[in-house]
Image (cartoon, rainbow, N blue to C red; front, side, top):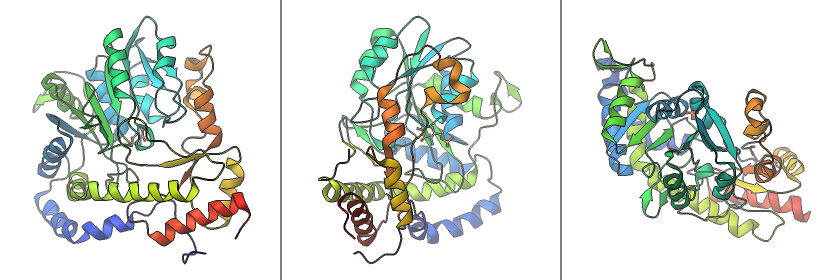
Length: 372
Ligand SMILES: *Cc1c(COP(=O)(O)O)cnc(C)c1O
């Protein structure tokens, strides 16, 4: 047996120890400057993440949900418009279009990757569809070549939900930079996490960028001139500061995540368990989701043996009470239902020790093979 008593689902303290000495004196400077809302730390982070992602513009906002909302507005999505979205994702994917009075058209996901199934999207395509939101779920890029071809054929705007996949590449390019706009979340548990809420929209389009900058700050292009109806979706200075100190570590943290995923693939590959597949581009393993018919029993077993785990996500969008009107008559989503019923997320975080990884592998193996 391995040497650790328990393994948390996620432990962010490893990241914090690495940035602590740089962050603390910088926070003193931020307070001295009262740079609490937007300000130089946010502007600096925007510049650096734009370079990292190789995009022209990065617009910091206060959450991933706000990012997606503003992207929907900038894409011209309004009342009655339809937007294709995967049925299996975090609900934050759809709030923005719902806030705009638009209609989500749910699509099933691919069995191997849990990303949007373009063949199913083709079947559900109809009049009024204006945009598509591919979600790079769990850190696995959606099949963006297929998304782009589909969107070009049907004249759709592509808005990427990159909340779980910062740093992942598709065909050599960072995801989020491939569509008209890419939306990121810096919720603390994401691969690049703030000290609170945060988000970002990126784009190569100058007009979109200007609109997004105005929208997040009360619709003003110049102070006290409100050309459009806006929001208070500004990024906090403190979040820009923390994110700026974390960004240089991101690739190393991603490598650590990939190493954990490789250890799991090696240690669990012979069990009656569907493991994550890497199919399009690379994978940054925000989550490591395995599937088994015995999901609930495995979850109870892991928890009883001190191994944290999670469900992402147990209720697909087409079964959410608040979205029922949009699911009515939409047909079946067998793969989304399968992920919801049988998916289980194992612990995976940057800085996870070998002993912790072994403890997870041993505990899962003991469940299936009856060893201890
Ligand atoms: C986290 C997340 C969001 C929303 O981001 P918040 O910052 O929590 O508002 C949207 N979509 C996906 C796929 C997410 O994982």
